[in-house]
Length: 300
Image (cartoon, rainbow, N blue to C red; front, top):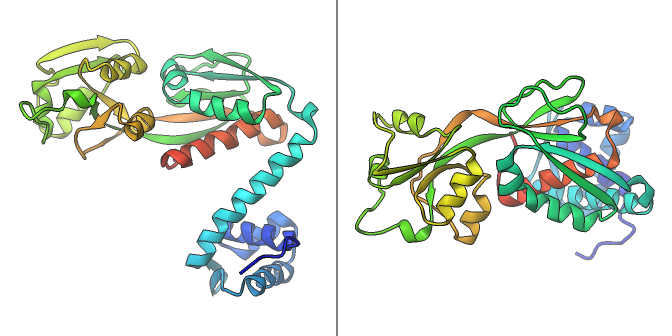
């Protein structure tokens, strides 16, 4: 049905909060509304749409199938509105944003986030500084940090961005009928690409295989080097799903086995507390989360 452009914004905000929390009380507290007022806004929206958005049981509010679909639409629309308000005041955006991250993140997938962010917010001057994997003490000055392994936050807010999962990948031309890879042991017939934080030993051990050395072995310092070597057809690398998500989508790398291995490491996001966070930093976090959703990588 066609929608009136004067669609009630208060009802949309009420629906989004209830849908996100799945609970009237928590949504009402967030919006500083009474339960009755919030429930009225949601029912008004359902009346406008002509369908149920929630199934109600006790104090819970479970989204219906239509409600889940509409929640995605509303959240996207509210995000766009928030970004549009920021654009009305370029002075709120102008300035530097310092991002500290590891070499592999900065080369393998962060450029996709930076590209989208810079197109949206050209007023922001981005500065990227390098930190080591598993570095505990972070630089004195940064706005956001993307870390492999949890660092010491020192007054910052730290949260796990996503859990790493590893599986073997290689360039398409390495896959052949002469040396098929149908089970983990078949990997040993190929050149394996290693890096100093690689997990080949753990991978093979989980499959009851003692050796972690292939027919040939090439060693690198960083993950981005071993993944680039795989792109060039030098061998097989164990890679995290996010590191090679774009490669798998574009066909520059192929996945060899369905088995994957969760590792103890994870990618952590470090930022200022929300109350003191700059608009520039928050919008970068929003862009980062959008990028992960589009790649199909679920945040932790």
